Length: 228
Ligand SMILES: [Zn+2]
Image (cartoon, rainbow, N blue to C red; front, side):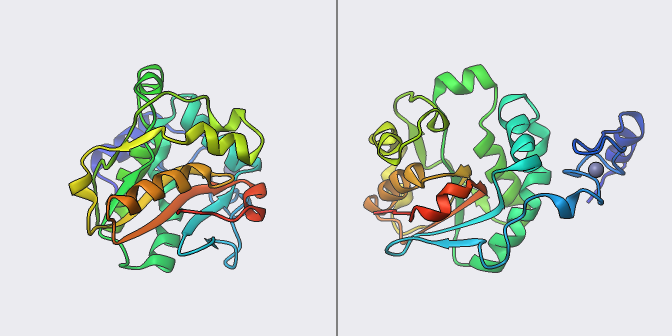
């Protein structure tokens, strides 16, 4: 829903489509209407990735092409206002595949060091935008207990697993027990990070852990997700 203030802002500061540079009709669009269908969205059969055991991850698009560029801008170039337009298509898929199967939304946190450098936690903003779309609440359940090199800097699944092992901890285990949790991250590649945090939530007694990410790297399709 657009407020009068949004209309005034759009009039004063029109934004351009990052793909074709046409002026967007309102600033909360990800790309223009013409470019939107050409983004690498996942096909309906690929949206829900079911891993071993009971793990599930819903994603909206492939981490490639213009979607990759947009997420890069969101994460590394300060475009935090992209949280809401990125959350829209993911919220639709979460709604379609998970319905009401979770009670609260949490996120994979970044380290204090990254937060200081970046100024915002992109997965937290995404979780908050999703909560708004889905009529749910967010709750910080996890903290990053040590700084780690970016997962994207590591190539092998084994390296990525050991990089995140023990890197997260529950903030308050009692807050997790019995909860049906949707955990949100920006990109899933091998699933190592989500497996690690999913394990923490399960061990703290979460009744259910579901995952959602904006994008999935094409390689992740080949590597099954494990949350235990
Ligand atoms: Zn465009």
